[in-house]
Image 1 (cartoon, helix red, strand yellow):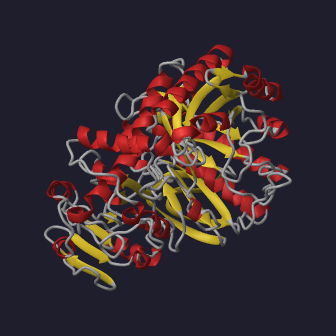
Image 2 (tube, helix red, strand yellow):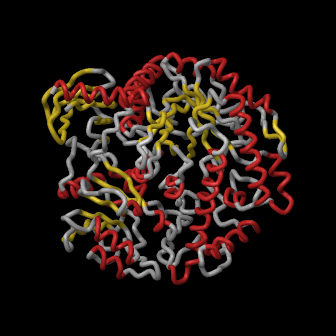
Image 3 (cartoon, one colour):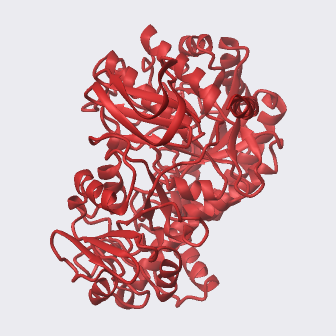
Length: 638
């Protein structure tokens, strides 16, 4: 037993020293992870405070644009001044000021590709809908003039930084679109360039050449104003596909350019792959971006809808898909602590924004976020958005301990022990009219509802079927599988619909076969009529079908019972967020007290890492006394 433990620690120490950002699924390459600090503002005192906690990686975003609230993204003047013209002194000062505050700083640089005001004015004649990439991203991306000038900017920008600060920069992030997260908010507004690009795109894919659908049709759908019928609305489906292709293709093109300019030791990332977004936002083709060899990591803020005490947090992407392609993840911790600065300037304040209410909530919330990053083996940054987020000594103490735990355990690549797989389906999302109020993304809503039921879950994409081993999973959840072609049905039958597995679907599964929309398809797949009320269960040929028409009925209580019947292991008796790998277990609670935790097997020693206390030995279950609220992260030694 001692030799086994020594071997395990040796492996853990080796992983910690290499600090790999991700274990590439194909070549097992270890890349550096980052525990870092970020702010929109020049918060030099905060940078010094973080340095005292052992955090020396700092993310900065030199920018030439304004944010969605009308304020400049950056406190420094714009440095992209004209066609091929730059104020490099202004840019350089942003780096030298950071290095003056922390001479040991390593830098992550967000490369903001959005249009500066001068570019918007120069493009306004004849290209007014192409000029503002922040609001009209897909229009800009299809405009040759915008692409040419932005590509030249990217090349000049990266060449300058590599020459001047190459030894200090560890990673770059490509950013564009609304909030610099590659969102396309033009929602059907098509410039002449985009119209022409749509024609070329259809021709390239050997499709029937159709005009851009008018907004009056893009904002409606024939089936319950929710789903589009390919027999009569294929042009709308294709146009949504096109918009998402434009964003993904452009990201891949820019990534190739960037990788050719930066040294091989530097990583490249981007915000992308948010599965909760509108189908026309531009994120649906995340699988192709994840597959791009030039991107090393993906960034996303924590899930916005599950941030309060007792909720689960986590990534906004299909994390299982990301892992399939061997990409790292950087977890943006951008939560509002109880000291958050709501006043951006004398002219702009953020109103009605929730925050953690006191130091206890801030402590429990930050420990949860650090635990998420540790368990997911991910990078992270603490986003001091507009200052004062990490203000108190108590908060900084949590940051320090979170960093110490992350340093030691985030490289422990123990595998997830989740037995519940939730499937996003970007191909089905092309058929959804999300412009109608009330038409929500069922995947995100079901994910949120069941994320705190006492057992870990993982999120995949439909196309992972046949490419990922799903043998350990006992419950498969398809909240929005509207599209089921014969080829897709064959995949399900080969890999999922067998061995007594339970499959939960909501709303209108399989209603579209690729050629037409037919409610009879729902019964053919689920065994129940479309719209059947309640929790409908039926034994099928080798598998169990559970159909819940209204996604709101797929609550944590309901799905927990279904999961228990499917044989899923639950770690706690009450509804509570749980994340777990073979060696790490996070439990987060709103209301504390002694709670029993039941493990899947016996472990020789169980240590709570934030307190560094041994809580059990030779045990498969134990009690832990939680504060209210609280987060605990346990290390499970075999």
